[in-house]
Image 1 (cartoon, rainbow, N blue to C red):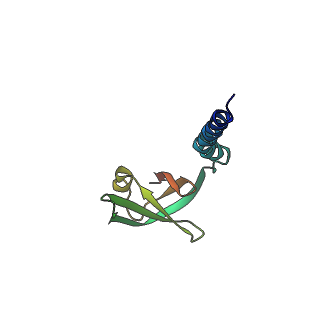
Image 2: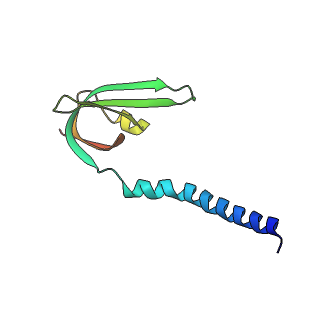
Image 3: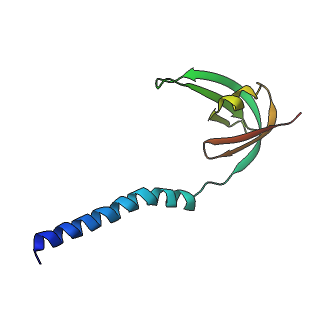
Amino acid sequence: MNSPIILMIVTLTISLVLFFLALLLPRFIGQMIRLPKLQTPAVLIYKGIRYSDKGFYLYILIFELPTGKRLTFHVKENQFINSQLGDHGILIYRGDQFLKFKIKY
């Protein structure tokens, strides 16, 4: 056989393997080290809307925990609308991802 053809086949095979590893590995790692879902009492202390330079609105909620720590989240519009300053409740989040705020009445 011609060695340039073999070299081309080997190179193509290695390239395909590396491509699929690069495509699938981040997802696999993300599933393996998934952050835990956390729940904590919190008070909503800030609501704000900012216009992004990419042409859409960012809805921001800041919560204060009993420890004094403050957590900032970008949320969906309906989550923003359904929250009122001063609301007390249970904040549920994962890392920097807002999941839910269960308001206590």
